[in-house]
Image 1 (cartoon, rainbow, N blue to C red):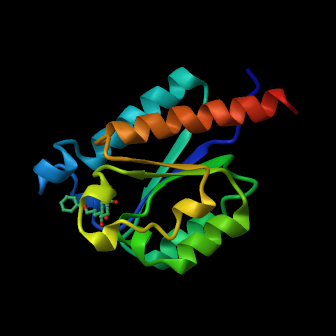
Image 2 (image 1 turned 135 degrees about the vertical axis):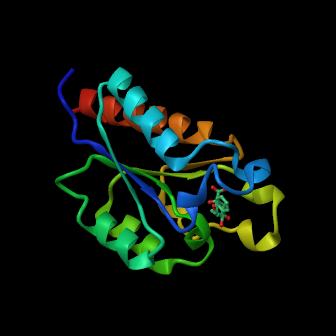
Length: 153
Ligand code: CA2
């Protein structure tokens, strides 16, 4: 298999608290645990991942903006910025890299303000409500998408 550029994994605000609070909503795994599992799965899939988290919208916009040429795709859980950030949406749309949005909880079964994602329309797809397994499903989807595109030249 020809090596691909790594996949950029971005987590937004408050996701550094995973495993420490609200396990009934977000499960009991820490972000470090999720990232470790993604690195292991990436190895099995023949890709690499780089994982970053920030509570600041501008950091996420900067990382997305500098991804082309360094990363092949983006897996992101934008946290609460999902529902508010035109800047993150514009960044994803501008760079044109395939992106998958992940939510641990089922945002459609929660408060109405969480039902709308500004970012999902510029992504390949969205996975939500599958707990932290959603990150692994998204990585599988992106790796398959990249391999398919590679095979088609
Ligand atoms: O379900 C998801 O993954 C969310 O992106 C999580 C965001 C929320 O604003 C979105 O609507 C859905 C919140 C992340 C906060 O994470 C915490 C983790 C542990 C304890 C408290 C918050």
